[in-house]
Length: 480
Image (cartoon, rainbow, N blue to C red; front, top):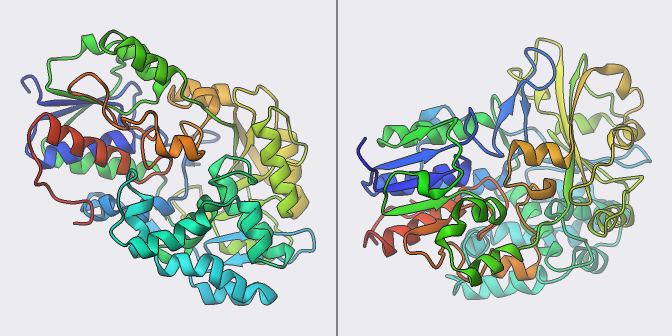
């Protein structure tokens, strides 16, 4: 290939998505990836024992199945198959009676008993209106296509999760269930926009499901790469970029990088005032992650916990809120909220016959070096006595390990930046994808709409580049 029209730095889902948008517009595109394999946070490896396939970072992808951009791509033809377990997520309690989120709102509401109507109004209403508010959630701030639906959603979304749960739900089971969903946002549950995170992810369980890719998260990245290559795009791995000056000449460069690594590679091309803004970008909680190889499934007290790949371990709303507040303020929780995924119950490609993989993480202070393995396993044992007896091998990743694997995750922040109200609107600055240097863009999860495997950050950044640099406006929209 001669000098390309455009270069993408980083082959995570957003970088690959940006490259696909550019390639579909007829441009010659090259993607440079520092690692030996593509995927960024959407990667699978053998971390414990031979034959056990573990997801390195992301595992369950409601945003992936919801993504209007991914819907516009023939990813099934390139090897992607989604698995939807019988239940979307399960939240066990100390009394052995778990709360189960089913695919339908009505089944979930019935399981919550006295809070059936409260759940329908709080989460079910958002699920029903998802087609009308999808563009609000998955795009940078703009005038919504359906203002009335967006306003109704906004009135609820701009409230802390604790307030929403306390006002709209009456039972501890329902309140804790909502808190666990909101805690995916990695912000304290008594702050804005934790309520929005709980509403969106909760609604997606009913609107599209909480599925995961058969064979591991890597298959989603591989499908994106395969489609890109079918369009003539090229991917170069083991190609770390220390400075953009090393790259071939190109009219546009899109960086699937968070602000810290972007500053390292692009400092010479950016004015001082913009570099200062990027340097002030805030990263949030870190993540402590563990993968296990098991010789049998987790022995849950409540057998219904085995109906879902996704399990939230955290007891009550107050316990979850305290755990997240501890991580936010620099303290180590003795009872951390644990997000757990058990994919091999539904995907036999993940482990040898009769064996299983397990994945879990908890939030810790940014860049923490605390050993959370004992307390994480204690939380699992709390709801599944005898769990440790089934462990064949463990693989631990501290925040520092996560950052070494992926420099975008500063301090182990898998969200690539705090998702509070300010950084939802100005992410990483008010310019969003554009930088002051013509032809240089940011397309990572540090831009709107932020964290999640959906490709929409790359999609929107690439559309900016097409308009600004190439004068191309008419391309296939994300909704097909």
